[in-house]
Image (cartoon, rainbow, N blue to C red; front, side, top):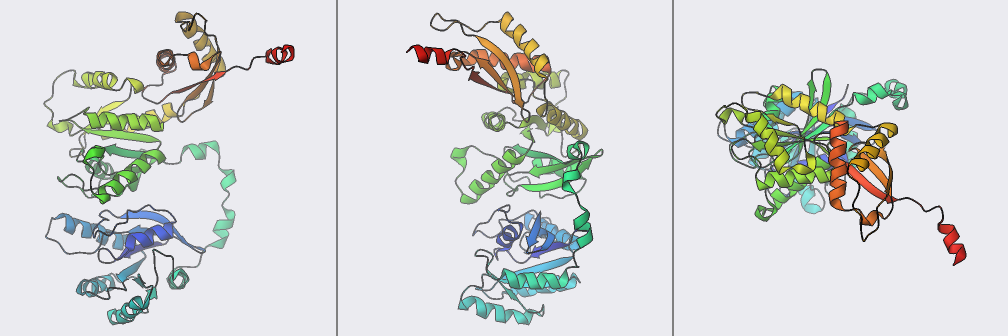
Length: 460
């Protein structure tokens, strides 16, 4: 069973920097601005031979009941309940503050093992702050610098003392190479939920989970980090990433928002299926189309969710109109699945999850070479490629090089002369015949080697 550590402390003491250090990746956003972290974020931490689940939390801070600050603290309290032990972090250079003392009492009341971490301890100023922390009554402080990686051996000793002994036999019995194809197919589908600010992404994920796991607010820009949550839906595992809203680049001025957008784009690149969530009151706006185009260029399966459908006056034929609008505005991914949802009321949740699975299956499609070339011969016969400079283009055969997304190579003469319009014709025909709606399809042209080229060289 995994051992869980929660990193707690007041804002801007370096909790997210320490989290990134222990997971070995820059997963959590880090900035000098206090209160960057809002939702709790989980990761798999490692320090030496110690392995554990680690939770980064919002800074402990007081706020009015119902306010965003108060709900951030509720997220932190939930993380403390889930944890087996706590790492209480304070800024050694600044020394103890009244908030540190108040929240040290909070940590003690949790009745769990606590490791006191004096971060930013480099230099003499850090030493004085660390000595001052004995007044908290949480034991000896571990002096570290999360940013520079100093003091991690002392942190290892402190964690080793509170963690159970590793189960060596269990580790030896695990055989990764023995995983079957069926086991591999059951691994979680990685899904990123993206869209403009305030489209209802976090509200929808909370409805899917059945709990207020992610912070939501009527104010745009509540989500900053890309937060991953595990979902089991009808026996299928999903790893779903909530992301910050994506505005037009010209409107992004603050450094923190630039970091949030970069984090969202990274979630898209690591996802397998991307759900583009639109506001039903303002759908298919320019920014929505830009995001969809980005997803297509990244080669990810796409599903469109038109959220806040409960605010739309119901009329016949609305869903058909949505599909027609999607094909009109996004011809490069014709047939993309589109689902009307309401995160607030829970409408369309099952339909969207089914659409995600269907899009994932299409994204993984492999077509047999025989069927592919039968289609290719018919497609070329029905609509031959145009002659260029009076010379006929010859397309020889096609083969699939990979799935995820479906990618094909067409062998031909004079690859550089084949017009883009003819490639679009082949892609659309391929989509229709092999039922590849809404997923990116890649066709690459490659010139077939001339078997008589060596004879020409010999004559010359």
